Each structure stands twice: as C-alpha cells, then as structure tokens.
Image (cartoon, rainbow, N blue to C red; front, side):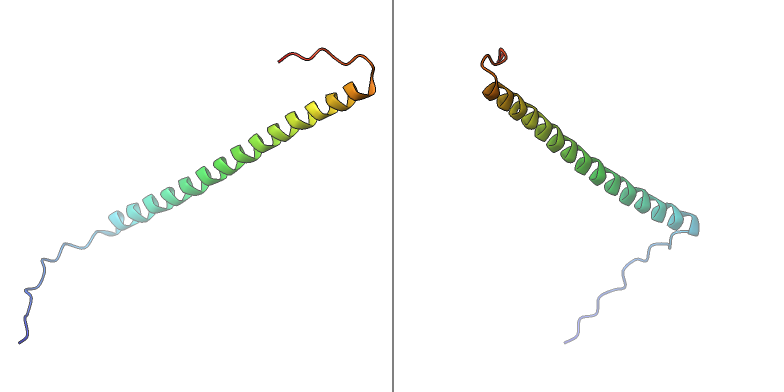
Length: 76
C-alpha cells in the first residue's frame, strides 16, 4: 500500500531583493555575534589584568613593610 501525500502548497519564491535582505540580515547577525564575543573577551582580559595589578601592588607594599621597621598604616 502506498500512501500518496497531496503536494504541499508551494510558497512563492522570494524576490532577489528579499533574498539579498535576508543574506544581509544574517551577515549583520554574524558580525554582531563576533563583535560581542570580542567585547566579552576583552572585558575578561581587562578584569584579570586589573586583579593582577592590584595583587602585585599589594605584594610590593608587603615586601616594603617587611624591609622597614615601621610599616605603612594599612586601612581596610
């Protein structure tokens, strides 16, 4: 037994202008995704750099305090 399905309604094919708009829209989406990925990576790198600089600054003062008799007054 073969069951034949009736042919599906065919939608009119998009015009070349509509196709170009669709492709341009996809390209914009890809560019936006790439740009946002780069932005997120840059933010993470800057945050890590700031944390590293802050830690190194504190370590430098700790070494200074260890060398001198009267260390700096530390505020918390």
